[in-house]
Length: 110
Image 1 (cartoon, rainbow, N blue to C red):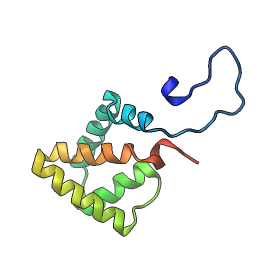
Image 2: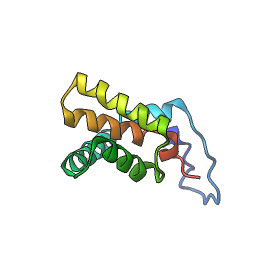
Image 3: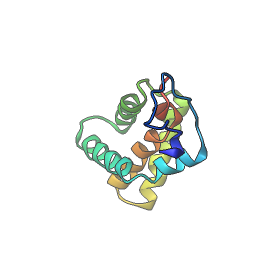
Image 4: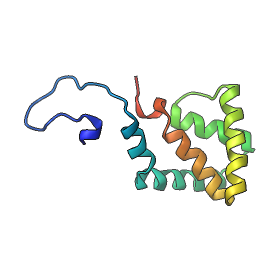
């Protein structure tokens, strides 16, 4: 927990400092539970009705709590296409969800 600047359990801390370091991002990006969560969400997404755009909008809204901008939607579409070149459909959707889970807006709620 030192990577996340967690306070010691020996004392009560009323307010925790907010930090954002590259090591935190790297740790979460490689965290197996993040991959499992992304793979599960990808599987449910693939089973849902709707177009690719509707699914991208829905998963973005589910993870970030707001609808994607046109630019974000375009980036997600391009990413999905690129990930499909490297693997199957499940891999592509898993990587899209994993990308969203690793956004700063997901990890640091204001």
